Length: 103
Image (cartoon, rainbow, N blue to C red; front, side, top):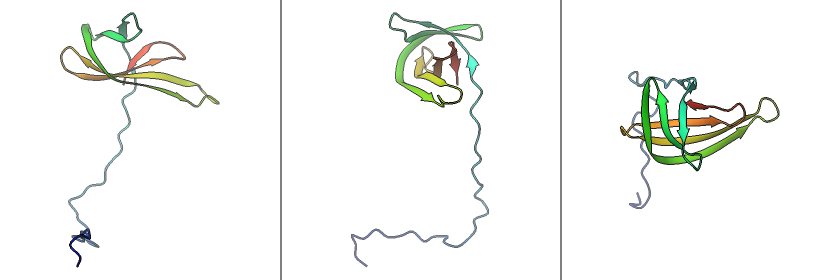
């Protein structure tokens, strides 16, 4: 065998391992409305949720999804945020119907 050739791992080949469980897909939580205060540039600056007001300390990522324009238009701008308590949160702004939602 050539030492530079990767060795295939054949452990358990053809055997059923009863300890392995099939992965189940979990649906995403339904979006829930969130009150958001934006800064002068339109970025989320503060969230009001469940009687609490939390400041956004970082916007880690921002992306937009536009889909199914031929049926029901979906146009959302997503934000991956970090709140003042260190918690990561993903929000989106519905660009068709308006409003902010937590995912």
